[in-house]
Amino acid sequence: MDGRQQLDGIGVSPGIAFAPAMVVRWDFPDVPDRAVTREEVPGEIARLRQAVSEVAHGLTSLRERVAERAGPEESGIFDAQILMVQDEDYLGSVEMLIRNNLLSAETAFEFKSLELREAWAGAPRLRERLTDLTAVQRQVLHRLLDRSDHEEWSIELDEPVIVVAHELSPGVTVQLDREHVVGLVSEQGTRTSHAAILAHSLGIPAVMGVPEALDHIRNGTVLLIDGKRGTVLLDPTPADMDTARARLSRRHRLALELETAVGEPAVTPDGLDVALMGNVDLPEEIEPALRNGARGVGLVRTEFLVTGRAELPTEDEQFAYFRRVADAFRRDPVVIRAFDLGGDKFPVGFRAPVEANPFLGWRSIRVCLDQQEIFRPQLRAVLRAAVDRNIQLMLPLVTRIEEILESRALLEEEARALARDGVPAAKSVPVGVMVETPAAVILADRLAQVSDFFSVGTNDLTQYTMAADRGNARLASRFTAYHPAIIRQLKDVSDAGARQHIPVSICGEMASEPLAAVLLIGLGYRCLSVSPPELPLVKWTVRRVPFEAAKRAAAAALEAGTADEVRAAVKEACGSYLDLRMFDPLNSLPDIRKAASLPTDFPTSTS
Ligand code: PEP
Ligand code: MG
Image 1 (cartoon, protein in one colour):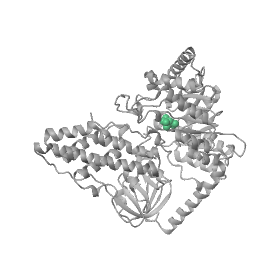
Image 2 (cartoon, rainbow, N blue to C red; image 1 turned 30 degrees about the vertical axis):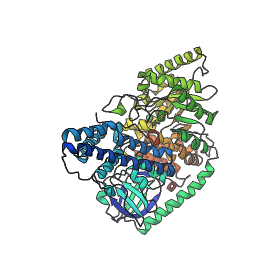
Image 3 (spheres, rainbow, N blue to C red; image 1 turned 90 degrees about the horizontal axis):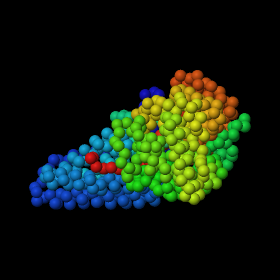
Image 4 (cartoon, rainbow, N blue to C red; image 1 turned 90 degrees about the vertical axis):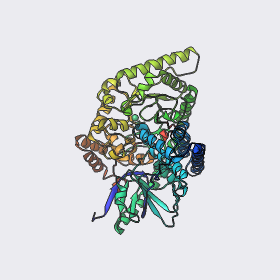
């Protein structure tokens, strides 16, 4: 590339931006160790309380601005920060330090803040929210040191820039002057970080997880960033600019074609009908799924009913929600997934043990079966909602046949109890298994004997097969469902389902990636459940690539030894039917735990 340099990261907010870099470093201020006299203690405590209340006040007005500009989900991010900064355990421990050790408010606050950050850094489910915590701590310290003008976004801009930082807090992302900040680059952050979600909602192109960006980019270095591909090009030439412009215009053309695709059937040119369903993580996704032509919901994630709340949802509340989804889709199937708690998703009110490896820990169906007071109300809600509706139940993270049998037994018990009590409810519902562990794949033929359907969760299947944490930016290129180990498992699952005559679908993010969708069709899948915004592009692709070509792609992929060979096989098979430049590189498939898990349940004490 004639000496020019390209840095690769994760595209978290699509769009192309071109401008000089503005490198910013939001460091923690130097806090001098300062002792106080006993008489000064009440004054220090009052200063601490005042600083905290100013920061909380600032965050509250940010929340209001975000609610206007981006919507209620996004503004909820600031509720979490307000909770963090006002946490009484946290502030109480700082006050104790001021009182007992006669330290100034800033010295004590810095000490306790460091302790808390270390605790969060060591806890997988909190690590991703460390940026949010750091940002509020920094603000309090700046105020205690009377340096509030140094904090967050107080830089005046009069020309367009791309902001480059080690990490971007949600507050910074929102306060950016959109006239002048045309793009964002950061070393930290993944698609699921709050700053990324906000950048996306605000329409600012952003690339995050760019290793060592600050070592390579100087203030004023001209950058060309592509927030879809996840690339940052330093000192682009006029030819690079032309390429980027052409890419942008192709994307616009495609957008127009997609509008038409929505109303058309998902049928390949040689007549194979593919059922494209939607994944619904939050109630707000019901409408986009319908609008984009989803034929039902292949995955209703239920965790939003739990995360960020102090109490578990009641049976009635769950019933109302399931009914609402089923009413929206009427005749088409709606597949409710049992609570996929654990890993990084636990309610505040639920005392979950701290585990060294939460993704290998007590999660999903294991929690449901061990904590029946959580599972039974959900089963009852499903049965009640299923009266005259096509509702099905899906069990996540199955690794053992017993889990299916026990779940079925509980479902039967609850159906009998409902009938006994005269509560209107279905006698049963189809029970399917999420195939998302290698154990489930290897045992698929046996699981199929006791399952009504399979749905493959390629996100977790990739994580567990590749031994690569799905949320770890450093592993993004290794976390790919194009790896032949995944492709072969996908074939095995589809074969096992066919032998047992049960339907098999895909609900992991792989199905939302159009060329991967072609591959999946070639591997035998006839039903794909897709993230609602991706439905038009997947359908547009399905309508252009014949089933024969999809089968060729699958056959070649099954012979491949590397992920690159799999990608090449798919491109080769699709090349004559599609302008492949329409598609951005077959990147690692994204982690989709986006807004669904925006947690507001931050334990802020270190105890
Ligand atoms: C999956 O693992 O592919 C899946 C669909 O479930 P989740 O992303 O919610 O873990
Ligand atoms: Mg999963």
